[in-house]
Image (cartoon, rainbow, N blue to C red; front, top):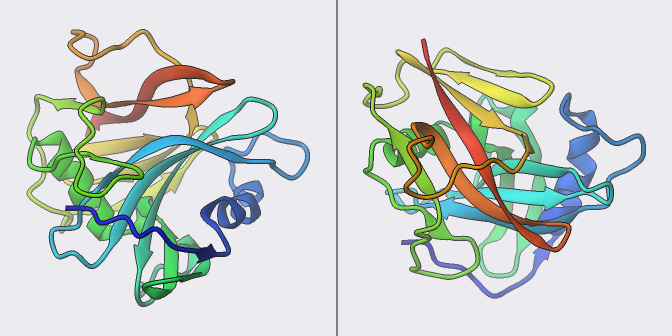
Length: 210
């Protein structure tokens, strides 16, 4: 399960995403973002090699951006365009930080989460599941990412096309009426964050049939 090291990261996650976000099609600001981390959760890599985080950052204008990230101890071959940056971790050394929609380990674990084979973990605590994260999908799912077709960015989301389904990773979060146990939670991942100092809850990801 996830181990969170209480140490330094230079540059920080906020600094990395602040520099990377303005070049994305979903960035809404006219000026450089002023981000604050306001929520998210993690998934475990079964091999224990790749960190997987689904982080939420709130800009000064109140926009909540969902940024999935992976943390690797070496570059991911062929994923140069997905590199958010590198950072020096006080325990693990140099970490290559990627947009997780282009990382096969992260995509495979999203599929596992939707299929009930992965347990969401608390963002800042070791060995601690996060039961507030609700994942649900009743249809067939691919067994892995061998059929991965592409990841295409839009103005509000990134669509990751797999064999039989598309994972729509929402980049700009909005509060929705869906809550744990609701029949409305039918295909996707619902989680929480803090927006404007208040608790919020909404879809982080949707599943679209191919």
